[in-house]
Image (cartoon, rainbow, N blue to C red; front, top):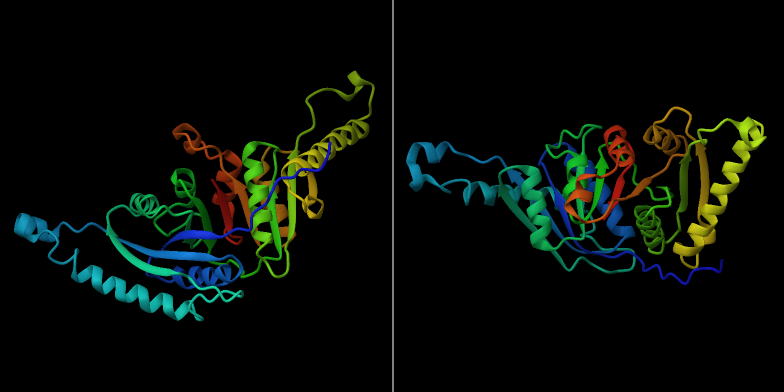
Length: 313
């Protein structure tokens, strides 16, 4: 098979929506966003905070009480707080290494369910990236990472509280599906924006076939070698076809699945190799496919409290 002429375009985010809780977790989120924006251009950013829906004034004053506080005074005060917080963390006012600057930074306050309002904001702003922080593996942000990744129409970046500000090693799980293509090409697109390219490691967790080695007149070790050779050839073809001109720079790793939990193997490998970013390609855009995020992605989002994860739609 000849090398692919697939063109990998450097990643540039046109519109980001960043969810703020106005709490302790925002500090780490904004620090990481400041770092990320210096690596990957972000043209516009909208910072969103969702207030709980207040019914106190409505119950006391009926319709006359609607919006007395929440639609003006609380919103204005919240926006002031958001501006103070973001300016303190985005120290150089979003000046990127190339000298480019964010064209627009806006703030919005909504009332209601945090996840629902965030999803609405993504649609209304036509965002191509939504960013949330995560205090721990279960996401005490009020917006579960798994639900956001499952339902949003945009790419989603989940930043754990303990995330390190580095992009030296990018890990991409590969199962040779269409979603794997998205993950691979996103990693390559990010790499094209980095001053010092990261190591991109594509990992495939494979299972031995459920047949006795004696039936094909091979020892167990010989059978394993056959399977790994097959996967190695599949990797080569996959990278040649979808990896663009620099596919030869991508590293590949095979891990045998002996216990049936692919997500745990991937997470263990990511931690052992000090990966800085996980990139997972999501399934398609139909309603059914969006609900079926994928068991491996679900597991990684549930267990991961250290490595930023980018879900690619």
